[in-house]
Length: 91
Image (tube, rainbow, N blue to C red; front, side, top):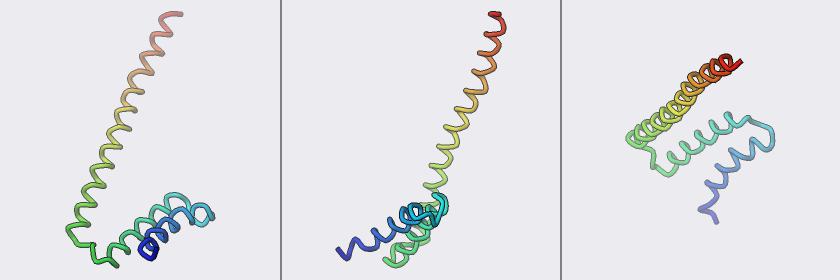
């Protein structure tokens, strides 16, 4: 039970602050990120190499999400004028 205490504290930090109205989801996510870094420091698992790989993975995931958003925006930007143009030609 004692081994679960840090994890439960981290979950409470994120969800508890949102549900109690103390923080927005973005602020709670920042608190959770800080809490996980502090836990890694406490367990002596945080090295420069681990931090570097975490930053690289974060950038890769963010780039993938932005590419999906960009593709959707391009699709909407191309298909919407085409649909309007086809409707105008039918009238």
